[in-house]
Image 1: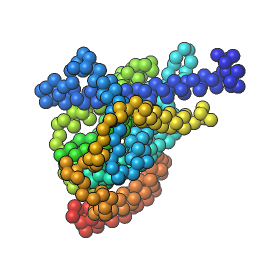
Image 2 (image 1 turned 120 degrees about the horizontal axis):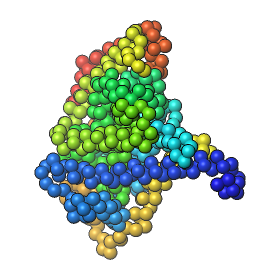
Image 3 (image 1 turned 60 degrees about the vertical axis):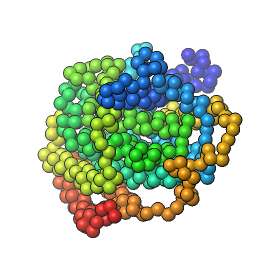
Length: 357
Length: 119
């Protein structure tokens, strides 16, 4: 190891650090893309299960290889660019939508400090930065540009309407999301996601999880994350009966697939964020000293429950009307989130911290 | 440089992944042997599209955007307060409550005026 490092003009520790970053980035990114692929199958299987039918079952056992078959299809499909579209923006839009969703994964702490080969490699996150929540909110809201660009650049009326709706919807619900998260920030006194998770995991008591102190904020964040990821019951950017397919009407092949990788990655990030903020992150109940792999497994289990919830809600609740969506966002969610934050702040400022943190 | 900023490295990796998927699909795509002038037209329920889509649009969302700017700046001010809520104590509480109260009066007025009603 040291010989190779010397040839590259680095010390052994530097090379190790670089390799660790490379391995971590690759593992987490590939993991997220695979979650996106598997979620397409889960979505179809769960919907089939809820509607009392079989769902995909031809490719592989129980249709498990369906995402792979879909991927092959996406790669080999013909590329059709609509007449009169703004070509550079049309091609840029899918990447603009997916890259922010992938970028936000970077600050999610998946597990506590990883100890491998007798060495502590730091927490299982790409970047453990102090302004994690700010970074996540800032980068996450940039994916709306991709949706607007896609809607505008296709030169199709349905796409344009879908893009406009997406932008209005995302800015309406972003505020409730920020304010709901702020209540947890006030409670934890930190915007470093790793510290917030560590606060809840320290004693191993599930009652330390912030959900039990902020149930309203948890619910508001859940609703806002449905809206932010354009999922049912708020999927107005692409609702089939009104807008054909919304902003992605004119997209096909890999460009379309990248939109969906972005959407499912965003779902995964929002689920992971909710788990870190409200459900103790990597905390294993009643095991404060659980090794990092157990914590990682607990984290993944909690995220899967959230992802299942996303699908469950999609196939259970009917879609709102667009004016109802705006009304709920501005007249119910926003005052509720603000009141929740102010009440939390007042409690903390006047009576000191309730409970442990 | 990469060691100091893992986020920069990740940005490059994320763009590379998305870009390689697009370019790979472009290289491997099946090319159609025949083409028809109708194929690249945009979808409009099977009819030929009536004019371009880049037309003037009802500014219904404009008020929403204005609201968003106001409240987003409010959130930006609340962030530092939320971080030091215990240290700021009663004084901070009074300041934030009066700040939010002023904004909410404006919000109530706008709601009464029907700014958020669907016209």
